[in-house]
Length: 169
Length: 169
Image (cartoon, rainbow over the protein chains, first blue to last red):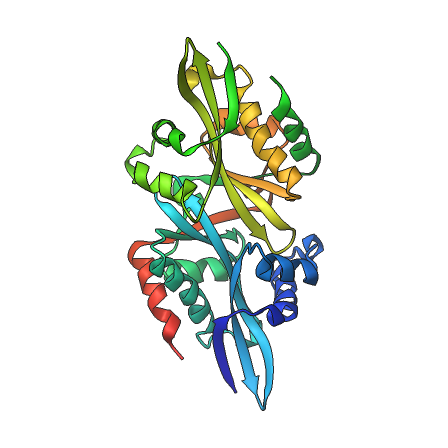
């Protein structure tokens, strides 16, 4: 059994969908997953690409199964320029402790360094102590704890109401 | 004295740089601003565009001055698809209370609705009560407060160290 870490292909989307659900269950938010396979395929591999992804592919006896992924995209800091945001990072529980996570996250960080991105950012639930410890051991800074940054969201009717404000003179 | 809200042009970059610095001073983080005008011009208006921006322009007696801006880019949620992240949103103090902020933020939200983006996200400092109140009045949700999301960052030597882990077998 070998585990390969490589860039995702369009044919990986079903495997990535399964892992997206695995991560959402882990975060106790599986009811929030509205993503569909066709959307993921189009948005990741269509004419406009909204994300990139590394996958961990377990290969044994000619069979292949995705057991981890790190999905990311470019963001922009008006203070430091191009950065990367790691939207999802997950290794299936039975494959942890083998360094797969470090290879996945390391691949994203390598892209950041190659593309001269000052930062890799990501979000973690405050109650997720094992993940927080994992990230802090690797030198990541909790910007919410240290600088008191809060993440805000506009969605649904509040988003539509503000959109209607754009035409006032 | 009319105030026009419009999409930014490359020639607006000096005005946007001045506002970026004003916002950083307001957030008490001006020493963190490393951005240079040539970088902003290239990254916003070059071959690869990393952000888009609306500006508020004050016109009087043939003279023009930028007095507010909202800078944003597309991000991706594996649960809901394409979203927008509003990186910076700022109106110079002497022009507040005239609805300029609503028109800027409304313009970003209108793009989100037109492009079928489920969410507009942004970050606010926890001590910035006046901004937090403003956003909450518009129906924005503090996800750090409500769901305990923490923003993490890898940078500098910690980022480089992780990048070096990508090639392990």
